Image (cartoon, rainbow, N blue to C red; front, side, top):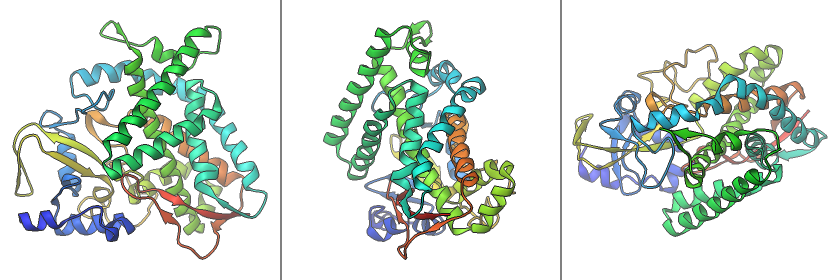
Length: 381
């Protein structure tokens, strides 16, 4: 590797965005530590990314903006994470699951009456964000506001547009704070996650509204990733009808299938870290204060870690998978995300005999920072 090779790499090149997985697989083998103006230093190999995740002191996850808890380093990170943990415990998930099933059934009803359906807009996006609204005790129709924010934030990240990003952050803050005020003014409603956040304290100090906005920004972005993951799961099942049939006949296999499909084809391209000192990775010296971009979708397909990495094998041990991250910043919302994905696939499979691609067009993929689908046209029977 040399500086000229690094400088020539452009992650926004059309050939890369056309097939991000293929492009990043090639980078993993050709230049596992690469530099670009857009991403800083990108890491593609599983062993390098796992090493970074295991050492938060050397590789910081502190955000330039308030980002609780994922944008905070230990030990403070752990105190916020502990305070927020009850929102994702088994008792809370048991409360959420029936409502998630209702939402899935409501959305699937019109889709199964015949004809072609664009799955992402008809189901994946509204299901994920309506379930989040149910968790928070917000009016269900507010999912569209949250969806607009997710889409706008992804565009701002892709374009590196700080003006658009700031405007979106302001609108999101206003939206959340209006819901917080509504909850404060209605003390007799059924308790929900918004109430839990309003009563959460860290080190004896109650969360303020700006902190709650930060937390919900993280949760909402995560549900954009859930929607992307759901599109990917259905894409693979539409391609592999034998796997569809196998999961219909034995729904207990669905959780393993979800983990394995998302390992092969993850919904989120990457996350950043920052070096707190000079480091050396794969022979490349990286100075203190440099951005690292951890390329999840390349690491999860690394043949050094996974045998036949591009094959979906639902019996595979996915313990080394990085779909949910690793280490202290392991995705805290993973229990909710897994529940939503499982419920959606269970309901879809139980209510259909078969679904397949409609038309001759190749399903249209989303681009960085998502690896999901922009559109997925299906036919159900």
